Image (cartoon, helix red, strand yellow):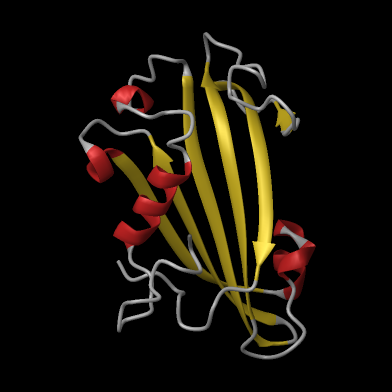
Length: 167
């Protein structure tokens, strides 16, 4: 969806609303009604982290972090939480996030997408409850607010001009 959403638009750069729409659409297989939104009646929530990097030189990267989550009260895309941070990072700092983000040439770009299904403190989702009947996503304990998260991640080279996201 990230690569195709702006194909028919004259402005190719993604917006916050685009990211929210992508996250909303990507989780509709499990949450097909407003039950996905706070207070999470199923005990499950969905969030996506995006790490965008662009190499300036062999030890300097532009890094943008986007956090998009089904977590706030509201209707439709207004119910989706959003957070953004931009910073400069070194080769070692990017490698610490994910070594697949490292670029070979100046101005090269990479995007790490991490999708999470988390559970509230009182529930423990199983892969079957989350709809994973064939594959087994990585699970781990997160913090005191969350019990278990199922995580999937992917690194792509985005089409030129999509990032950084316009606020």
